[in-house]
Length: 257
Ligand SMILES: Cc1cc2nc3c(=O)[nH]c(=O)nc-3n(C[C@H](O)[C@H](O)[C@H](O)COP(=O)(O)O)c2cc1C
Image 1 (cartoon, rainbow, N blue to C red):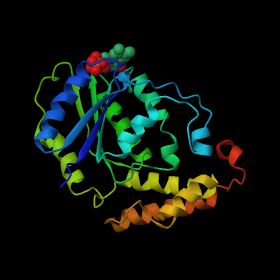
Image 2: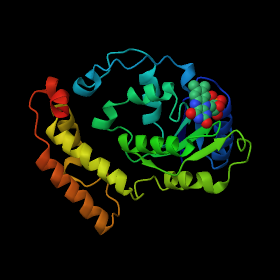
Image 3: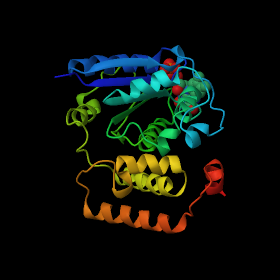
C-alpha cells in the first residue's frame, strides 16, 4: 500500500517557532506511517498577486514563479498542514499572499476531498481567530478542516497530544471521502456552485464536467436532513438572487456591483 502524503506549508519568513512545531508534528505523523514534506514559503519565489484576475477568468496566472510547483505538491498530497505565525492578529503576509495566489481554486477547486490541519504560533494573542481563518481557507479550497493546533511562547515546547492530530490522521486514512462536511463547508459549496452556474463559462464547464452542478457537495457522503435542507434553501435563494453574467471578461466586475 502506498503511504499517505502530507504537505506542510510554513508561512513564516523564518524557520523558528512555527517550524519547530511543524517538526514535532512531522515526527508524529511519520510514526503513523505518513510521508511528510515541509515547504517553507521563504525557500520559494512567490511574487505578490497583481489582482488582474486572469487566473480566475482565463484559467492560469500570468506570473511565472514557484507557485505552480507548490500547487502541484498540494494537489498530489492527501492532507495539508497550513501553518503561520500570528502577525497583527492574523496570518503572516507571506501566507496571505500565497493564499491569494490560489484564488482560482475558489472557482475551480483542485483539493476537494483532502483534509486540512490549521497550525499557528503566537507571542500571546489572536490564536483562535487565526486558526479559524485557516479553517475558512479550507472551505475556499473545497477541503475539510479539522480542529487546529495552536501554541504560544509559554507552551511551545509542550509535547503534542494524540488528540490534537489524530482526527487529521483518521480522516486521511478513511480517504476522507466519507467525512461529513460541516454546515459552513456545505454553505460555501452552494455559493461556489451558484457562482459557477451564473458567473463564468470557464467555471460552469469545469463544474459540469465534474458533475458538481447537480450535487449538494463535492462527493457523496452522509448529510443530515436539516443540513441538507439549509443547503438546498441557500442554493435556491442564491440562484434566484444572483443574475447571470454573459461576458467573461467583465463577469467578475459585473457580479460585484
Ligand atoms: C510582524 C509581526 C507581527 C506579530 N503580531 C503578533 C500579534 O498580533 N500577536 C501576537 O501575540 N504575536 C505577534 N507576533 C509574534 C509572533 O506571532 C510569534 O513570535 C510567532 O511565534 C513567530 O513565529 P515564527 O518564529 O515561526 O516566525 C508578531 C510578530 C511579527 C514579526
